[in-house]
Image (cartoon, rainbow, N blue to C red):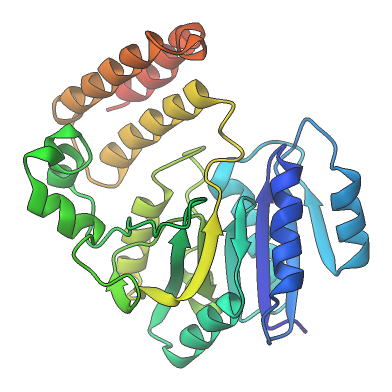
Length: 305
Protein backbone atom coordinates (compact mmCIF):
# COMPACT_ATOMS: atom_id res chain seq x y z
CA UNK A 1 0.00 0.00 0.00
CA UNK A 2 1.47 3.39 -0.95
CA UNK A 3 2.16 5.80 1.89
CA UNK A 4 2.25 8.85 -0.35
CA UNK A 5 0.03 9.67 -3.32
CA UNK A 6 1.45 12.10 -5.91
CA UNK A 7 -1.32 13.70 -7.95
CA UNK A 8 -0.29 15.44 -11.19
CA UNK A 9 -2.86 17.44 -13.13
CA UNK A 10 -2.37 17.70 -16.91
CA UNK A 11 -4.12 19.58 -19.67
CA UNK A 12 -2.60 19.47 -23.18
CA UNK A 13 0.93 20.09 -21.90
CA UNK A 14 2.48 16.65 -22.09
CA UNK A 15 6.04 17.96 -22.42
CA UNK A 16 5.91 19.53 -18.96
CA UNK A 17 4.24 16.39 -17.61
CA UNK A 18 7.14 14.30 -18.92
CA UNK A 19 9.65 16.58 -17.16
CA UNK A 20 7.65 16.38 -13.93
CA UNK A 21 7.53 12.57 -14.05
CA UNK A 22 11.24 12.37 -14.82
CA UNK A 23 12.03 14.57 -11.82
CA UNK A 24 10.01 12.21 -9.60
CA UNK A 25 11.87 9.15 -10.89
CA UNK A 26 15.19 10.98 -10.44
CA UNK A 27 14.37 12.26 -6.93
CA UNK A 28 11.79 9.87 -5.44
CA UNK A 29 10.66 9.99 -1.81
CA UNK A 30 11.90 7.29 0.52
CA UNK A 31 8.30 6.45 1.39
CA UNK A 32 6.32 4.06 -0.80
CA UNK A 33 4.44 6.17 -3.30
CA UNK A 34 1.92 6.04 -6.12
CA UNK A 35 1.83 8.57 -8.96
CA UNK A 36 -1.70 9.45 -10.07
CA UNK A 37 -1.79 11.34 -13.36
CA UNK A 38 -5.11 13.08 -13.98
CA UNK A 39 -5.65 14.29 -17.54
CA UNK A 40 -8.30 17.02 -17.70
CA UNK A 41 -9.77 16.03 -21.09
CA UNK A 42 -6.79 17.12 -23.17
CA UNK A 43 -7.50 17.78 -26.83
CA UNK A 44 -4.08 16.43 -27.85
CA UNK A 45 -2.81 12.92 -27.24
CA UNK A 46 0.05 12.16 -24.90
CA UNK A 47 3.52 12.07 -26.43
CA UNK A 48 5.46 8.85 -26.96
CA UNK A 49 7.78 9.96 -24.17
CA UNK A 50 4.90 10.18 -21.70
CA UNK A 51 3.49 6.83 -22.84
CA UNK A 52 6.89 5.28 -22.23
CA UNK A 53 7.18 6.87 -18.79
CA UNK A 54 3.70 5.66 -17.87
CA UNK A 55 4.39 2.12 -19.05
CA UNK A 56 7.82 1.94 -17.39
CA UNK A 57 6.73 3.33 -14.03
CA UNK A 58 3.85 2.70 -11.70
CA UNK A 59 1.49 5.44 -12.80
CA UNK A 60 -2.28 5.41 -12.49
CA UNK A 61 -3.61 7.39 -15.45
CA UNK A 62 -7.11 8.81 -15.11
CA UNK A 63 -8.63 10.51 -18.16
CA UNK A 64 -11.52 12.83 -17.35
CA UNK A 65 -14.25 13.08 -19.96
CA UNK A 66 -14.52 16.83 -19.36
CA UNK A 67 -12.09 19.52 -18.29
CA UNK A 68 -13.03 19.98 -14.63
CA UNK A 69 -10.59 22.80 -13.90
CA UNK A 70 -8.01 22.90 -11.15
CA UNK A 71 -10.18 21.99 -8.18
CA UNK A 72 -12.31 19.45 -10.02
CA UNK A 73 -9.33 17.69 -11.57
CA UNK A 74 -7.50 17.51 -8.27
CA UNK A 75 -10.62 16.18 -6.55
CA UNK A 76 -10.48 13.17 -8.89
CA UNK A 77 -6.85 12.51 -7.97
CA UNK A 78 -7.40 13.03 -4.23
CA UNK A 79 -10.34 10.63 -4.23
CA UNK A 80 -8.21 7.97 -5.91
CA UNK A 81 -5.33 8.50 -3.46
CA UNK A 82 -7.68 8.14 -0.50
CA UNK A 83 -9.13 4.95 -2.01
CA UNK A 84 -5.58 3.57 -2.28
CA UNK A 85 -5.02 4.23 1.42
CA UNK A 86 -2.42 6.98 1.03
CA UNK A 87 -1.61 8.79 4.28
CA UNK A 88 -0.26 11.85 2.50
CA UNK A 89 -1.35 13.41 -0.79
CA UNK A 90 1.02 15.62 -2.77
CA UNK A 91 -0.75 17.81 -5.32
CA UNK A 92 1.44 19.23 -8.06
CA UNK A 93 1.04 21.11 -11.31
CA UNK A 94 2.65 19.37 -14.24
CA UNK A 95 5.03 22.31 -14.79
CA UNK A 96 6.84 21.52 -11.52
CA UNK A 97 10.16 19.70 -11.20
CA UNK A 98 11.23 18.16 -7.89
CA UNK A 99 14.71 18.51 -6.43
CA UNK A 100 16.44 15.86 -4.29
CA UNK A 101 14.77 15.11 -0.93
CA UNK A 102 11.92 17.57 -1.59
CA UNK A 103 9.02 15.16 -1.33
CA UNK A 104 10.50 13.32 1.64
CA UNK A 105 11.10 16.63 3.46
CA UNK A 106 7.44 17.60 3.02
CA UNK A 107 6.22 14.18 4.10
CA UNK A 108 8.48 13.93 7.15
CA UNK A 109 7.39 17.37 8.34
CA UNK A 110 3.73 16.46 7.85
CA UNK A 111 4.09 13.24 9.84
CA UNK A 112 5.92 15.00 12.67
CA UNK A 113 3.23 17.69 13.03
CA UNK A 114 -0.30 16.18 13.07
CA UNK A 115 -1.88 19.62 13.55
CA UNK A 116 -0.41 20.75 10.22
CA UNK A 117 -2.80 19.81 7.45
CA UNK A 118 -0.87 21.32 4.53
CA UNK A 119 2.85 21.78 3.92
CA UNK A 120 4.19 23.77 0.98
CA UNK A 121 7.74 23.93 -0.45
CA UNK A 122 10.11 26.69 -1.44
CA UNK A 123 9.40 27.59 -5.08
CA UNK A 124 12.12 28.56 -7.53
CA UNK A 125 11.21 30.14 -10.85
CA UNK A 126 12.87 29.22 -14.14
CA UNK A 127 15.68 31.69 -13.33
CA UNK A 128 16.36 30.10 -9.96
CA UNK A 129 14.85 32.97 -7.97
CA UNK A 130 12.75 32.25 -4.89
CA UNK A 131 9.07 33.01 -5.42
CA UNK A 132 8.06 34.93 -2.29
CA UNK A 133 4.29 34.78 -2.49
CA UNK A 134 2.79 32.80 0.35
CA UNK A 135 -0.47 34.20 1.69
CA UNK A 136 0.32 35.04 5.29
CA UNK A 137 -3.16 36.14 6.33
CA UNK A 138 -6.74 35.76 5.20
CA UNK A 139 -7.73 37.63 2.05
CA UNK A 140 -10.58 39.83 3.21
CA UNK A 141 -12.18 42.95 1.72
CA UNK A 142 -9.26 45.14 2.77
CA UNK A 143 -6.70 42.83 1.18
CA UNK A 144 -8.67 42.62 -2.05
CA UNK A 145 -8.55 46.39 -2.47
CA UNK A 146 -5.33 47.49 -0.77
CA UNK A 147 -3.03 44.55 -1.48
CA UNK A 148 -4.27 42.79 -4.60
CA UNK A 149 -4.58 45.93 -6.72
CA UNK A 150 -2.05 48.60 -7.69
CA UNK A 151 -2.86 50.34 -4.41
CA UNK A 152 -0.25 48.05 -2.90
CA UNK A 153 2.29 50.68 -4.02
CA UNK A 154 0.82 52.95 -1.34
CA UNK A 155 0.11 50.32 1.32
CA UNK A 156 3.57 48.81 1.13
CA UNK A 157 3.81 47.44 4.64
CA UNK A 158 0.49 45.63 4.32
CA UNK A 159 1.63 44.27 0.96
CA UNK A 160 4.92 43.00 2.40
CA UNK A 161 3.36 41.27 5.38
CA UNK A 162 0.51 39.79 3.32
CA UNK A 163 2.86 37.98 0.91
CA UNK A 164 5.50 37.31 3.54
CA UNK A 165 8.22 39.43 1.97
CA UNK A 166 9.39 40.08 5.53
CA UNK A 167 9.88 36.33 6.22
CA UNK A 168 12.95 34.13 5.89
CA UNK A 169 12.11 31.88 2.93
CA UNK A 170 14.94 29.53 3.82
CA UNK A 171 13.12 28.71 7.05
CA UNK A 172 9.80 27.23 8.13
CA UNK A 173 6.81 29.29 9.21
CA UNK A 174 3.03 29.18 9.47
CA UNK A 175 0.98 30.86 6.73
CA UNK A 176 -2.68 31.20 5.87
CA UNK A 177 -2.23 29.47 2.52
CA UNK A 178 0.59 28.25 0.28
CA UNK A 179 0.54 28.43 -3.51
CA UNK A 180 -1.51 25.74 -5.23
CA UNK A 181 1.19 24.69 -7.71
CA UNK A 182 2.52 22.21 -5.14
CA UNK A 183 1.32 21.27 -1.66
CA UNK A 184 1.09 18.20 0.54
CA UNK A 185 -2.06 17.34 2.50
CA UNK A 186 -2.22 14.86 5.36
CA UNK A 187 -4.90 12.22 5.02
CA UNK A 188 -6.85 13.65 7.97
CA UNK A 189 -6.81 17.08 6.38
CA UNK A 190 -7.79 15.78 2.94
CA UNK A 191 -10.74 13.93 4.44
CA UNK A 192 -11.87 17.11 6.22
CA UNK A 193 -11.40 19.84 3.58
CA UNK A 194 -12.07 17.97 0.34
CA UNK A 195 -13.69 17.81 -2.10
CA UNK A 196 -12.56 21.28 -3.10
CA UNK A 197 -15.15 23.79 -4.27
CA UNK A 198 -15.52 22.99 -8.00
CA UNK A 199 -17.47 26.11 -8.98
CA UNK A 200 -14.33 28.14 -9.83
CA UNK A 201 -12.67 26.72 -12.93
CA UNK A 202 -9.34 28.45 -12.29
CA UNK A 203 -7.87 30.75 -9.62
CA UNK A 204 -8.73 31.83 -6.06
CA UNK A 205 -8.33 28.18 -4.98
CA UNK A 206 -5.73 28.98 -2.34
CA UNK A 207 -7.93 31.68 -0.80
CA UNK A 208 -10.89 29.33 -0.51
CA UNK A 209 -8.74 26.49 0.81
CA UNK A 210 -7.28 28.76 3.49
CA UNK A 211 -10.76 29.44 4.82
CA UNK A 212 -11.60 25.73 4.81
CA UNK A 213 -8.41 24.98 6.71
CA UNK A 214 -9.25 27.60 9.32
CA UNK A 215 -12.78 26.23 9.72
CA UNK A 216 -11.46 22.72 10.38
CA UNK A 217 -8.65 23.78 12.70
CA UNK A 218 -5.67 22.71 10.57
CA UNK A 219 -2.49 24.76 10.22
CA UNK A 220 -0.73 25.47 6.93
CA UNK A 221 3.07 25.67 6.92
CA UNK A 222 5.71 26.79 4.45
CA UNK A 223 8.78 24.53 4.66
CA UNK A 224 11.86 26.05 3.04
CA UNK A 225 13.95 22.87 3.24
CA UNK A 226 11.82 21.33 0.48
CA UNK A 227 12.49 22.88 -2.94
CA UNK A 228 10.72 22.70 -6.29
CA UNK A 229 11.32 24.38 -9.63
CA UNK A 230 8.22 25.90 -11.21
CA UNK A 231 8.09 26.72 -14.93
CA UNK A 232 4.87 28.72 -14.40
CA UNK A 233 1.66 28.54 -16.36
CA UNK A 234 2.44 25.82 -18.84
CA UNK A 235 -1.22 24.93 -19.31
CA UNK A 236 -2.51 28.51 -19.47
CA UNK A 237 0.27 30.27 -21.35
CA UNK A 238 -1.56 30.07 -24.66
CA UNK A 239 -4.98 31.05 -23.31
CA UNK A 240 -4.21 34.31 -21.53
CA UNK A 241 -7.55 36.05 -22.10
CA UNK A 242 -9.49 32.91 -21.17
CA UNK A 243 -7.44 32.54 -17.99
CA UNK A 244 -7.85 36.20 -17.05
CA UNK A 245 -11.62 35.98 -17.52
CA UNK A 246 -11.83 32.96 -15.23
CA UNK A 247 -9.62 34.75 -12.72
CA UNK A 248 -12.13 37.61 -12.46
CA UNK A 249 -15.12 35.26 -12.44
CA UNK A 250 -13.56 33.33 -9.57
CA UNK A 251 -12.72 36.53 -7.73
CA UNK A 252 -16.33 37.71 -7.86
CA UNK A 253 -17.47 34.30 -6.64
CA UNK A 254 -14.96 34.32 -3.78
CA UNK A 255 -15.99 37.81 -2.69
CA UNK A 256 -19.67 36.89 -2.80
CA UNK A 257 -19.57 33.34 -1.44
CA UNK A 258 -16.67 33.38 1.03
CA UNK A 259 -16.50 37.02 2.13
CA UNK A 260 -20.22 37.85 1.95
CA UNK A 261 -19.56 41.05 0.00
CA UNK A 262 -22.49 42.88 -1.57
CA UNK A 263 -22.64 43.93 -5.19
CA UNK A 264 -21.83 47.57 -4.40
CA UNK A 265 -18.70 46.41 -2.58
CA UNK A 266 -17.54 44.25 -5.48
CA UNK A 267 -18.31 46.60 -8.38
CA UNK A 268 -15.34 49.01 -7.94
CA UNK A 269 -12.98 46.04 -7.87
CA UNK A 270 -14.69 44.55 -10.90
CA UNK A 271 -14.41 47.72 -12.97
CA UNK A 272 -10.76 48.00 -12.01
CA UNK A 273 -10.23 44.48 -13.42
CA UNK A 274 -12.17 45.42 -16.58
CA UNK A 275 -9.87 48.42 -17.05
CA UNK A 276 -6.84 46.11 -16.82
CA UNK A 277 -8.43 43.80 -19.39
CA UNK A 278 -8.98 46.73 -21.77
CA UNK A 279 -5.37 47.79 -21.32
CA UNK A 280 -4.29 44.32 -22.41
CA UNK A 281 -6.56 44.62 -25.45
CA UNK A 282 -4.30 47.39 -26.74
CA UNK A 283 -1.38 44.96 -26.82
CA UNK A 284 -2.78 41.46 -27.31
CA UNK A 285 -5.09 40.27 -30.06
CA UNK A 286 -6.42 37.35 -28.03
CA UNK A 287 -7.75 39.79 -25.43
CA UNK A 288 -9.52 41.79 -28.15
CA UNK A 289 -11.00 38.62 -29.64
CA UNK A 290 -12.23 37.37 -26.24
CA UNK A 291 -13.84 40.65 -25.12
CA UNK A 292 -17.46 39.60 -25.57
CA UNK A 293 -16.92 36.29 -23.81
CA UNK A 294 -15.13 38.09 -20.98
CA UNK A 295 -18.00 40.53 -20.45
CA UNK A 296 -20.63 37.79 -20.66
CA UNK A 297 -18.81 35.48 -18.25
CA UNK A 298 -17.90 38.05 -15.62
CA UNK A 299 -21.07 40.11 -16.01
CA UNK A 300 -23.21 37.05 -15.36
CA UNK A 301 -21.26 36.32 -12.20
CA UNK A 302 -21.61 39.90 -10.98
CA UNK A 303 -25.39 39.78 -11.47
CA UNK A 304 -25.56 36.93 -8.96
CA UNK A 305 -24.49 39.28 -6.19
